[in-house]
Length: 265
Image (tube, rainbow, N blue to C red):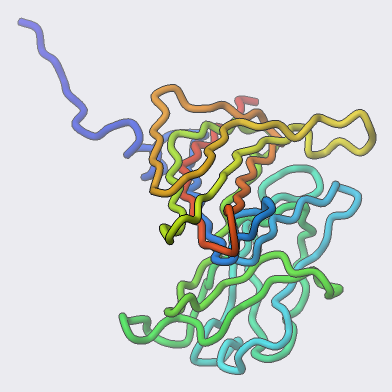
């Protein structure tokens, strides 16, 4: 008699539960509420910094935040950063907030930052009480260049919205799905570009080009794409998403599911 065993949990569930060796998922999302008529990144502050390795920077929480967002305050007490260092390896770091003052600089230096989140808060979060009190801006530690912002967005959201990401060294990125939501207002349409740039550690010309992966023009409603055969991005590749609107300014948001597979060593 043949006995068949059925695994009722899909493979993707095992990945999400960290049951799959050398695989993890990035649920990467972003929005830009002030997209203009020229292409700009879909992120909270309209930037995705991409310096070359020689220009790697330490980061910090920018001065000018809310006094309650401090190490012993009622708001955000610390934030956690995810990005890449000058070698292209993924690094994370937790830094304490300092209220209206600038925080200490990170120990790690960064060439990419694709996520920042409130790590600890001084208030038990509810539907009426969030975990930070003001916008929390991440900047270059020497000042003068903002990298990301954890915004209130009407309610303290405790995370950035950066609609771009970079594949770390010794990994392959598989784009499994993408959802694009433009502002639906009058005659305004949105154009969206998904771009890639390989070889982010290149220090001298000739460089790998910025190349179009997908393009959506005159978009007026939400687009959702699930790729039965995911789009493959090699190690050390930027995956950037830009948008522009036909007139005035508008909001565009994006949501991507990217499977990062670590190469065998």
